[in-house]
Length: 69
Length: 271
Image 1: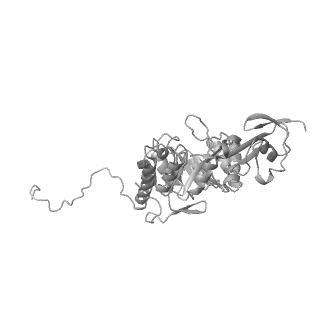
Image 2: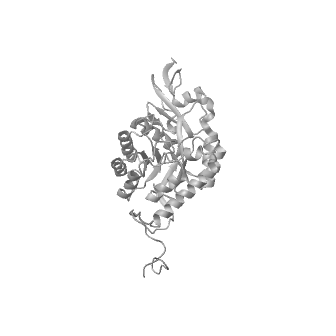
Image 3: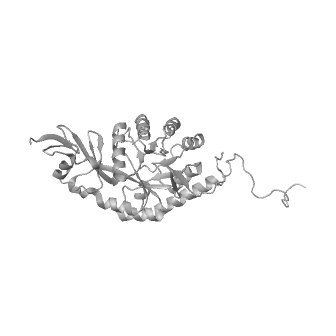
């Protein structure tokens, strides 16, 4: 499969991942942690990660809880 | 000074977003010397609500699990925030992501308009609050002491309106006590929580005496010399302020009024 370019947490990267879940695993994320993902500013529910397809130019954000006021 | 409604109620607790609470102190979780100090401060002050943030996760950071597990162990209601967002859309997206992680509809809505004062962008806040309320969120809206905006936020269904006392982290205390007192008086049915800018327990007591339902603070406890003792001091001040509010304080007077009766003064009164 031809690699395509997208952004993850603001950083450019290339991937051949078929799905969001595959991308997360490719990048080394541990899936069973408290985190959420959005693609192009839209939440992708965890249940949809395995089948959510990616496209050239997608902006993926992966966030987790931190301290805050 | 006028007293407000329910002057003689005892503080058997209060309710926000469908949840009954005993404590009227919310604490943030940032800037503590350690997670253990945060935990001890939360326990000592018997708080029931903690605010948390959300930030980008890098795979090598391990997912912040240690913080997440510690926070969950405290058994508090979690109020995730949209701190750092500069637009309504950013805040709306982050709120949805927060709901996904925390499994709560509660969201502390922050949309920042100025990076120096961290003053909220009121128009974007109202836009986001309107949408998030439609999306089923219980919005705790961080705002300024602007009365009309507070009324608008309440009008679109915010669970709580949270005016600042002063800019975040400044510890200045209420910059405009009149505005806060007026807001309470003009919005008797709204849940009002003073959020940001408090520095000392006396500040918290002051706004609670106005009749505010609760206060939210972070830096004043986290960066105190002794955060655990300070958390307790704030909890006591919040309780004292609430007690004063429901006890109908005496009004301010211009002239002195003798405490000791003047009838029967000996010796130097003209007969």
